[in-house]
Image 1 (cartoon, helix red, strand yellow):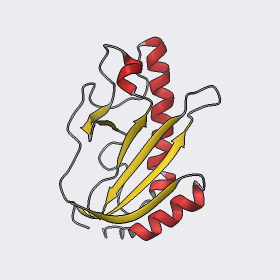
Image 2 (cartoon, rainbow, N blue to C red):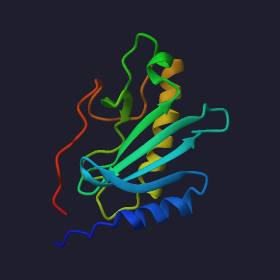
Image 3 (cartoon, rainbow, N blue to C red):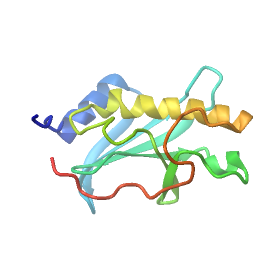
Amino acid sequence: MMKAKSLPLVVQLMLLRKHIPEGRGQIGASRKGRQLRWFQAIRPHVLGAVYQIELQYAEGHRPLVLVISPDLQALAGKRKLPHTFREVNGKPSLCLWFRGDWDFSQPVATTVIPWAAEWFWFFEHWLVTGEWLGGGRHDTPITPPEQSVAI
């Protein structure tokens, strides 16, 4: 079976701009190489809070979704945040998919970003009920994947 071809960062950025015109982003250099950074607000439902996120997507690395605001830990109080990776630059990183659910050929605009909105819906439910309905395989923060992936 052939591996699907990776979408170039410039195509990812164009698709983000097409699907989410109110967001903003650019491609630049980072310690990991070329990186797409995308900023946008997400409201998981009509009565939900507004969450400011940053998507970081470096070539050869899995995308990270960081929560800029509000402070999720302050909302959670003394409870551990569910289904997150350890903080990156002081911001929680959301765990959004299982290995194999996403690959480099898929647009982040139609996969990762909607998954983030769904994560916030489950988070708001968890804040009220204490029950995480979003599934997943871990209930404590883990380190986000940093390894390079062959494309």
